[in-house]
Image (cartoon, rainbow, N blue to C red; front, side):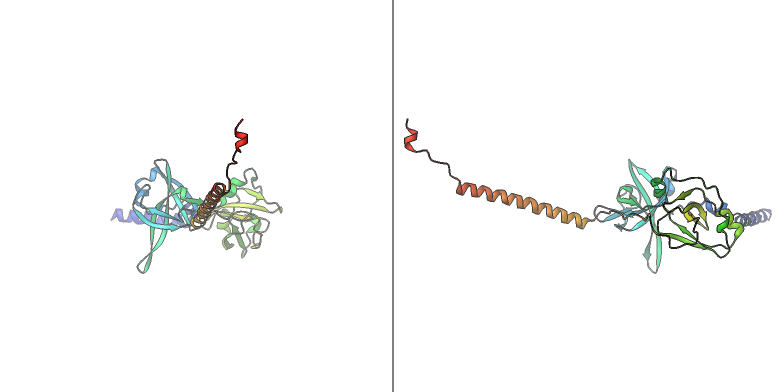
Length: 277
Protein backbone atom coordinates (compact mmCIF):
# COMPACT_ATOMS: atom_id res chain seq x y z
CA UNK A 1 0.00 0.00 0.00
CA UNK A 2 2.84 2.34 0.90
CA UNK A 3 4.60 1.56 -2.40
CA UNK A 4 1.42 2.29 -4.37
CA UNK A 5 1.00 5.70 -2.67
CA UNK A 6 4.68 6.45 -3.27
CA UNK A 7 4.36 5.61 -6.98
CA UNK A 8 1.25 7.79 -7.34
CA UNK A 9 3.08 10.68 -5.65
CA UNK A 10 6.01 10.36 -8.06
CA UNK A 11 3.68 10.38 -11.09
CA UNK A 12 1.80 13.44 -9.82
CA UNK A 13 5.06 15.27 -9.13
CA UNK A 14 6.36 14.43 -12.62
CA UNK A 15 3.16 15.74 -14.18
CA UNK A 16 3.47 18.97 -12.22
CA UNK A 17 7.09 19.42 -13.33
CA UNK A 18 6.08 18.92 -16.97
CA UNK A 19 3.33 21.50 -16.59
CA UNK A 20 5.60 24.04 -14.92
CA UNK A 21 8.71 23.49 -17.06
CA UNK A 22 7.58 22.42 -20.56
CA UNK A 23 10.71 23.87 -22.18
CA UNK A 24 13.08 21.80 -20.09
CA UNK A 25 10.92 18.72 -20.62
CA UNK A 26 10.64 19.04 -24.41
CA UNK A 27 13.72 20.88 -25.59
CA UNK A 28 16.14 18.08 -24.76
CA UNK A 29 14.10 15.23 -26.25
CA UNK A 30 15.80 13.50 -29.19
CA UNK A 31 13.70 11.25 -31.38
CA UNK A 32 15.03 7.70 -31.67
CA UNK A 33 13.34 5.52 -34.30
CA UNK A 34 12.22 2.02 -33.24
CA UNK A 35 14.90 0.08 -35.10
CA UNK A 36 16.38 -3.22 -33.89
CA UNK A 37 19.89 -2.60 -35.23
CA UNK A 38 19.93 0.92 -33.78
CA UNK A 39 18.86 -0.41 -30.39
CA UNK A 40 21.67 -2.99 -30.35
CA UNK A 41 24.38 -0.59 -31.59
CA UNK A 42 23.14 2.71 -30.18
CA UNK A 43 26.46 3.60 -28.50
CA UNK A 44 28.24 3.24 -31.86
CA UNK A 45 25.79 5.42 -33.78
CA UNK A 46 26.08 9.18 -34.29
CA UNK A 47 23.06 11.47 -33.99
CA UNK A 48 22.51 13.50 -37.18
CA UNK A 49 18.86 14.58 -37.69
CA UNK A 50 19.17 16.13 -41.16
CA UNK A 51 17.12 15.68 -44.35
CA UNK A 52 18.47 14.10 -47.53
CA UNK A 53 17.37 13.52 -51.12
CA UNK A 54 17.48 9.96 -52.40
CA UNK A 55 20.20 9.95 -55.09
CA UNK A 56 21.04 6.50 -56.40
CA UNK A 57 22.97 6.10 -59.64
CA UNK A 58 20.31 3.69 -60.93
CA UNK A 59 17.47 6.07 -60.08
CA UNK A 60 16.61 4.41 -56.79
CA UNK A 61 18.15 3.21 -53.51
CA UNK A 62 17.63 -0.14 -51.86
CA UNK A 63 16.72 0.04 -48.16
CA UNK A 64 18.33 -2.63 -45.99
CA UNK A 65 17.32 -4.02 -42.61
CA UNK A 66 20.80 -3.21 -41.25
CA UNK A 67 24.04 -1.64 -42.51
CA UNK A 68 25.76 -4.00 -44.97
CA UNK A 69 22.82 -6.44 -44.93
CA UNK A 70 21.55 -8.22 -48.04
CA UNK A 71 18.00 -8.15 -46.66
CA UNK A 72 16.06 -5.52 -48.65
CA UNK A 73 13.07 -4.00 -46.86
CA UNK A 74 12.11 -1.44 -49.50
CA UNK A 75 13.24 0.87 -52.30
CA UNK A 76 13.30 4.67 -52.54
CA UNK A 77 13.06 6.70 -55.75
CA UNK A 78 15.49 9.53 -56.53
CA UNK A 79 14.23 12.91 -55.37
CA UNK A 80 12.30 11.64 -52.35
CA UNK A 81 13.30 13.32 -49.08
CA UNK A 82 13.89 11.48 -45.82
CA UNK A 83 15.29 12.39 -42.43
CA UNK A 84 18.43 10.54 -41.32
CA UNK A 85 18.32 10.50 -37.54
CA UNK A 86 21.47 8.43 -36.87
CA UNK A 87 24.46 7.17 -38.86
CA UNK A 88 26.63 4.08 -38.42
CA UNK A 89 30.10 3.25 -39.77
CA UNK A 90 30.10 -0.20 -41.37
CA UNK A 91 33.67 -1.18 -42.36
CA UNK A 92 34.47 2.40 -43.39
CA UNK A 93 31.15 3.05 -45.17
CA UNK A 94 28.59 5.39 -43.63
CA UNK A 95 24.98 4.22 -43.37
CA UNK A 96 21.95 6.19 -42.20
CA UNK A 97 18.71 5.04 -40.61
CA UNK A 98 15.45 6.45 -41.99
CA UNK A 99 11.79 6.11 -41.08
CA UNK A 100 8.92 5.91 -43.54
CA UNK A 101 5.24 5.02 -43.58
CA UNK A 102 4.05 2.11 -45.70
CA UNK A 103 0.60 0.76 -46.34
CA UNK A 104 -0.17 -2.24 -44.15
CA UNK A 105 -3.72 -3.23 -44.95
CA UNK A 106 -6.06 -0.45 -43.92
CA UNK A 107 -3.47 1.59 -42.02
CA UNK A 108 -0.05 3.15 -42.56
CA UNK A 109 2.73 1.39 -40.67
CA UNK A 110 5.91 3.07 -39.45
CA UNK A 111 8.98 1.23 -40.71
CA UNK A 112 12.70 1.84 -40.50
CA UNK A 113 15.64 0.90 -42.70
CA UNK A 114 19.27 1.67 -43.51
CA UNK A 115 20.69 3.25 -46.67
CA UNK A 116 24.26 4.09 -47.76
CA UNK A 117 24.99 7.77 -47.13
CA UNK A 118 26.86 8.07 -50.45
CA UNK A 119 23.52 7.45 -52.19
CA UNK A 120 21.94 10.45 -50.48
CA UNK A 121 22.26 14.18 -51.15
CA UNK A 122 21.98 16.67 -48.29
CA UNK A 123 19.00 19.03 -48.32
CA UNK A 124 20.15 22.63 -47.76
CA UNK A 125 19.14 23.63 -44.22
CA UNK A 126 19.92 26.06 -41.40
CA UNK A 127 23.25 24.29 -40.76
CA UNK A 128 24.20 24.74 -44.42
CA UNK A 129 23.28 28.43 -44.08
CA UNK A 130 25.53 28.69 -41.00
CA UNK A 131 28.43 27.08 -42.86
CA UNK A 132 27.99 29.41 -45.85
CA UNK A 133 27.91 32.54 -43.66
CA UNK A 134 30.67 31.96 -41.12
CA UNK A 135 31.91 35.22 -39.72
CA UNK A 136 28.70 37.10 -40.54
CA UNK A 137 26.87 36.31 -37.30
CA UNK A 138 27.07 38.42 -34.15
CA UNK A 139 25.75 38.44 -30.62
CA UNK A 140 22.30 39.99 -30.44
CA UNK A 141 22.43 42.82 -27.88
CA UNK A 142 18.72 43.69 -27.78
CA UNK A 143 15.68 41.75 -26.66
CA UNK A 144 12.57 40.44 -28.37
CA UNK A 145 10.14 42.17 -26.05
CA UNK A 146 8.83 44.37 -28.88
CA UNK A 147 7.78 41.21 -30.76
CA UNK A 148 5.61 40.00 -27.91
CA UNK A 149 2.37 41.73 -28.78
CA UNK A 150 -0.77 39.73 -28.06
CA UNK A 151 -2.40 38.61 -31.29
CA UNK A 152 0.73 39.14 -33.41
CA UNK A 153 1.38 36.31 -35.88
CA UNK A 154 5.15 35.94 -35.75
CA UNK A 155 6.67 34.38 -38.90
CA UNK A 156 9.42 31.79 -38.43
CA UNK A 157 11.69 31.06 -41.43
CA UNK A 158 14.06 28.21 -42.28
CA UNK A 159 16.90 30.75 -42.59
CA UNK A 160 17.20 34.40 -43.70
CA UNK A 161 16.09 34.75 -47.30
CA UNK A 162 14.99 31.14 -47.68
CA UNK A 163 11.47 32.12 -48.75
CA UNK A 164 10.32 29.09 -46.74
CA UNK A 165 8.02 29.73 -43.77
CA UNK A 166 8.33 27.03 -41.11
CA UNK A 167 5.34 28.26 -39.13
CA UNK A 168 3.44 31.33 -37.98
CA UNK A 169 2.54 31.55 -34.31
CA UNK A 170 0.32 34.07 -32.59
CA UNK A 171 1.46 35.48 -29.26
CA UNK A 172 -0.79 34.02 -26.54
CA UNK A 173 1.18 33.39 -23.36
CA UNK A 174 3.62 36.22 -22.65
CA UNK A 175 5.27 34.57 -19.65
CA UNK A 176 5.97 31.37 -21.56
CA UNK A 177 6.92 32.92 -24.89
CA UNK A 178 9.21 35.49 -23.29
CA UNK A 179 11.49 32.60 -22.28
CA UNK A 180 11.38 31.06 -25.75
CA UNK A 181 11.65 34.07 -28.02
CA UNK A 182 15.35 34.69 -27.40
CA UNK A 183 17.76 35.27 -30.28
CA UNK A 184 20.86 33.11 -29.82
CA UNK A 185 22.70 34.98 -32.56
CA UNK A 186 21.88 37.60 -35.17
CA UNK A 187 22.48 38.26 -38.85
CA UNK A 188 21.96 41.32 -41.05
CA UNK A 189 21.09 40.82 -44.71
CA UNK A 190 22.12 42.99 -47.67
CA UNK A 191 18.90 45.02 -47.37
CA UNK A 192 19.75 45.95 -43.76
CA UNK A 193 17.15 43.67 -42.12
CA UNK A 194 18.18 42.12 -38.82
CA UNK A 195 17.40 38.47 -38.20
CA UNK A 196 17.49 36.42 -34.99
CA UNK A 197 18.12 32.69 -34.63
CA UNK A 198 15.54 31.07 -32.30
CA UNK A 199 16.67 27.63 -31.02
CA UNK A 200 13.23 26.56 -29.72
CA UNK A 201 9.68 27.84 -29.96
CA UNK A 202 6.52 25.76 -29.45
CA UNK A 203 8.33 22.49 -30.26
CA UNK A 204 9.86 23.97 -33.45
CA UNK A 205 13.64 24.08 -33.44
CA UNK A 206 16.32 26.10 -35.18
CA UNK A 207 14.27 28.77 -36.96
CA UNK A 208 14.90 32.42 -37.84
CA UNK A 209 12.75 35.50 -37.23
CA UNK A 210 13.18 38.80 -39.04
CA UNK A 211 13.45 41.07 -36.00
CA UNK A 212 12.73 44.18 -38.08
CA UNK A 213 9.60 42.68 -39.68
CA UNK A 214 8.46 39.75 -37.53
CA UNK A 215 4.95 39.53 -39.03
CA UNK A 216 5.87 40.06 -42.69
CA UNK A 217 5.16 36.93 -44.76
CA UNK A 218 6.29 38.53 -48.03
CA UNK A 219 10.03 38.93 -47.47
CA UNK A 220 11.56 37.96 -50.84
CA UNK A 221 13.59 34.77 -51.18
CA UNK A 222 17.03 36.31 -51.66
CA UNK A 223 18.77 33.11 -50.53
CA UNK A 224 16.52 30.22 -51.66
CA UNK A 225 17.31 26.54 -51.33
CA UNK A 226 19.63 25.40 -54.16
CA UNK A 227 18.15 22.92 -56.61
CA UNK A 228 19.62 19.42 -56.14
CA UNK A 229 21.64 17.81 -58.93
CA UNK A 230 20.38 14.25 -58.85
CA UNK A 231 21.42 11.22 -60.85
CA UNK A 232 19.19 10.67 -63.86
CA UNK A 233 19.78 7.21 -65.38
CA UNK A 234 17.75 8.17 -68.48
CA UNK A 235 20.04 11.09 -69.26
CA UNK A 236 23.09 8.94 -68.57
CA UNK A 237 21.81 6.33 -71.05
CA UNK A 238 21.23 9.03 -73.68
CA UNK A 239 24.79 10.26 -73.16
CA UNK A 240 26.13 6.75 -73.58
CA UNK A 241 24.06 6.26 -76.74
CA UNK A 242 25.41 9.47 -78.25
CA UNK A 243 28.95 8.39 -77.41
CA UNK A 244 28.38 5.06 -79.20
CA UNK A 245 26.94 6.90 -82.23
CA UNK A 246 29.96 9.22 -82.38
CA UNK A 247 32.41 6.31 -82.16
CA UNK A 248 30.59 4.38 -84.90
CA UNK A 249 30.45 7.48 -87.12
CA UNK A 250 34.16 8.14 -86.75
CA UNK A 251 34.96 4.48 -87.46
CA UNK A 252 32.75 4.58 -90.57
CA UNK A 253 34.52 7.70 -91.88
CA UNK A 254 37.92 6.08 -91.36
CA UNK A 255 36.80 2.89 -93.13
CA UNK A 256 35.37 4.81 -96.13
CA UNK A 257 38.56 6.86 -96.37
CA UNK A 258 40.64 3.66 -96.39
CA UNK A 259 38.51 2.13 -99.16
CA UNK A 260 38.75 5.29 -101.28
CA UNK A 261 42.52 5.34 -100.89
CA UNK A 262 42.80 1.72 -102.00
CA UNK A 263 40.54 2.27 -105.04
CA UNK A 264 41.76 5.59 -106.37
CA UNK A 265 45.36 5.84 -105.27
CA UNK A 266 47.84 3.88 -107.36
CA UNK A 267 51.63 4.10 -107.15
CA UNK A 268 53.24 5.96 -110.10
CA UNK A 269 54.98 3.56 -112.56
CA UNK A 270 58.62 4.23 -113.43
CA UNK A 271 59.20 4.37 -117.22
CA UNK A 272 61.68 1.95 -118.82
CA UNK A 273 64.01 4.65 -120.15
CA UNK A 274 64.48 6.05 -116.70
CA UNK A 275 64.98 2.62 -115.21
CA UNK A 276 67.96 1.75 -117.45
CA UNK A 277 70.99 3.82 -116.98
